[in-house]
Structure formats: structure tokens, C-alpha cells
Length: 547
Image (cartoon, rainbow, N blue to C red; front, side, top):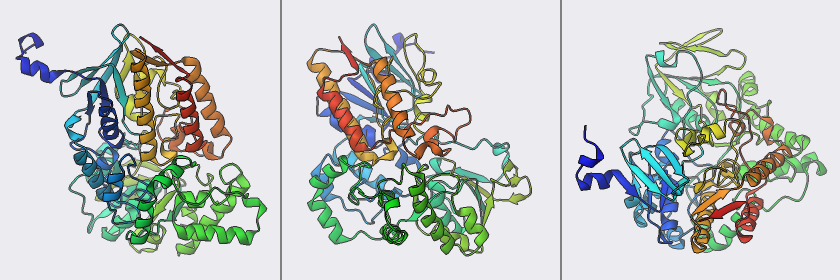
């Protein structure tokens, strides 16, 4: 076996690399980081496990995969030329269209030349003596850089359910987050879908149209509203594009990072039942998540107010699903509206009126095992040719836990987070200098428009690096007291709402053994942005810069 001393110079250069910034991830965050940091004259390199760019939109190719934020808002804002030239075919973008858009951006701004594809980062270690990160990959790269950015995504580590016998199944099985690029034909098959979160709700109507019979195994019913998707309205597109600067600024100063209805001024409890009904009906027909949740100012903090909106949606479900027993099973009753992420759908509830669809309630009759022939509950066994796991992800922390991240001779990030993730602003971690995260735990993350959050974080990080470099600093580290104070604030804000009341992936409830810590800042993107802006304006208070 050759060692480095015996390798040709070109081979050594290919294996040992030095950059100013190493980026883990080649999705929306990693690509914008390349673009933004290049403008500062920094030499950067991103490492992406996939064979193409796109991140979550590269991997999640399941039938019906679609964003629940409107196309004209779920897009980059850093280039007005890009905003003006790109046209979306539908109101809500599909996975293929989003991936096509990302690939266009990567080509237009020549970003791919700084992405190493088919390369998984295995470890990242910070040397306190040299103030350098060393990253090692599964392709044999040894990469050093003073700064490292984790652009690993919040929903990028697929999770299989903890059910005995998964590997014994003799049919075909798939996970929504690792879908075959060539697609799957369900025609004439007996198919089982386990999971009714957002991916399940999107794929079930399409699989039902193909399958001989579809069995949906549901443990928890979820709130979902119709997207009323359709072709892009040309007039709306022209108006939006002509007002992009104003609309983007309004989005950045809104709670969800989305321009929709104006902020509500009334409580749901101070208006008549008839007025509430009219308001909810109008929001239902409008077809946006933010529209429904912003109908009244207290829907996320007052259980009585929340119940009015939740019951409105339950009444809609009962009116759509013809079998009363099935309708009741599909009505969420164990968690407040928005304590789990609500979904937008296209004919999801209508699907249960089909003769070839069976809803299996695994709350009352849990899955006992997956067998070679199908799924066995306590009362029955369902013979299946194909299984689909729409069981979600190890959210927020999973991707970073898969990498051995540490300061030399110190604990790993996973060990630091053994009791739950702790960060400063969702951007840095005490004890890990020069390591930045994009939309990490403790930031609004998925509770706001993700691309806008990504751009904001990358811009903030770039400005922070510029500040440090201009002052001769080579080391940036979050102070432990600041991290603890921010963590307490995140939990206090969440406790003032109804959102933590559900057993959701927001608190890690979908992963056995994962500590139950609420991982999102839910005080609103506008409030979060003001706080981060203030931190920067005050000389990056809470960060220790040395050199």
C-alpha cells in the first residue's frame, strides 16, 4: 500500500487540499455559500454526498413531491436578474422543477466547479494550535480550512421506523427521502404506505391512482389543507416580479418569511362564530398554510382560539370523506393545529373515497412486525408487494451527528448535544471555533421560508468572517454564557405557544432515544432577524474573536 511520501505530486495534491472555507453540503445553502464567499475573495470548496447538487430536492423524488411555499417566494433573492428570468410553471413548485431551478442557478453562476460530488464528509476536527479545521472524506480527501460551514440541511437524514422485521420483507421497499431516480411503477401492486406526514400526504393520492390496492398505515392524523394548485397566473407573476424588492423586504420582516395576508389584529375569541367561519372559509379557499394560521393573532398561543380553526378543518374532512368512521380517523384530535407542521395537499382526503384504498389505524391496532409477505398488526396481516416508508427524518441534528465533529481532544458534537442541541443563534456552538451552521437548531429553520433563512444566515456568516478578517482575528467562538442564554430564550418563547404540545419531530419525538428538546425558534423570523442584526451591529456580542 502506498503512503503519501511515495505518491506522485499530482496525486498528493488531489488528496490533500487547502481552502479558506470548507462547506459541507451542495444544496441550496451550500451553493449560495459558494457564491457569497467567492465575492469576498475566499477560496471555497463544498462537499456533497449526492451525485448532483440540490440537497433535499436531489434526494426526495417520491411521487407528488412539492414545496408548500409558493414558487414566486420559494426562490433565491440575491440576483434580480435571476428572479426576472426564471418562470415557474405552477403556483406551487414540484420537485423536478425545483431541482431544475437549482441546477440552473449552479450553472448560471458557475458554482459546480467548487462542489465535490459523490463525496461524504466523515469527520471534521479543529486544531486549537493552528486554528484550522481538517475534514476527511470517504473518497480519501484530507481538507484543511480555517473555517467550516455545515450546510447539511434540516431534513436530510432519512429514518426507518423502529419496527421488527424491516429487513425481512421480500417485496420492494422505498423511503421517501431516498427515492430511486428512475421512479417507481406501482401499477397493479398491493402497496402499503407507512406514515401520514407531509411526504405521505403528497404521495398517497398518486400511488392510489396506480396501485391495485393501497393500504395506508396511520398512527397520527395530521392537519392538511388544499393547495388549490394550478398553472402560474401570468398577471400575478408580472405583478410579483415588478415588486420583488418591496415584497422580499416585507417577507424578511414577517414572522414566517412569507408575504401573504397582513398581520392579524383580532383574537379569534372576540369575533362571532359566523365571522370566524367566513374568515376560515376564505383562507381555506386561498390555499396557503400561513393564510390559515394568520387568520387571528392568538391561534398559536390560545388553545380555545386554536380549537376554532382546528374544528373548522375537522368539519371539512368530515364533509369530504364519505365513510364517517374513516373521516373520524383522519381528523386530528391529539395535538393543536400547527404544533406539527400543517400540510398542503392535492385531493388527499378525497383519496379515501376510492374503493382501492384502505386506512389502517395503527394507533388502536399497532404494527407488530414487518414480515416477508407484508405488515402484521395485532389483529391482522396485510399481504403487500411493495412497502413505502414515509417516516420522515432525524431532523435538525441527524446529518451533523453522522459526522465526527470535534475540537482536537474534545467531545464530539453528538456528545455535546447528548441532552439536546445547544447553539448560539442557531449559527455557532460553544467549544467549536470557526464552525458555522446554516438554519441550525435554535434558529427559525423550517418554521420560516427556508431559502430566505438560508440567504440570511449565509450573509450573516459572510459579514462575520469579513469583520473578523478586517480586525486581524483568526478565531471566532461562541461564548458559553451567550449560548446558554440563547437556548433558554428559545425554550421560553416556545413555552409561550401551543407548538411544543405535540409529539413531533420539532422535539425529536420520532427518533427513539433522542432527547426531547424543542429545536426551533418560533418567535417569528422578523424578531429573530432583529436580534441577529443587533448582535452584528454591537460587534458580534456573544462571540469571542481572537487571533
